[in-house]
Image (cartoon, rainbow, N blue to C red):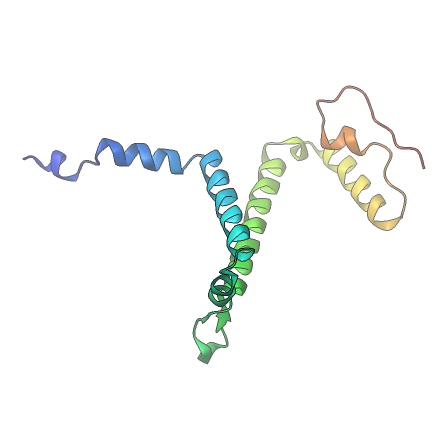
Length: 139
């Protein structure tokens, strides 16, 4: 047996790793986990679910002895904001915000909507730049 055969990945494993790297598969796994959690939390054995979620883990010396529910919420928030940061960087470097004029227009719309109660007039055209018709809202 040669070194190449010894350290080569089996074909099935590479297929599985390729499938797990796909965004759709990850989304379906997350959706499936959410459905299982909802069904478990609303079933007759919901005490086991809440007992599991309220289990404390982590180093108490560092004040990190949090429940599994707290750890899960913190981890999902961290992943969410990491993805949002990556998307924002992509838009600033390669996307519509890389053009200074479009970025200034978007910044003006955001600051206007934050500083007043009135909605900006061309929100749909900024969010969906491929839309050819401007969808204006009436005050």
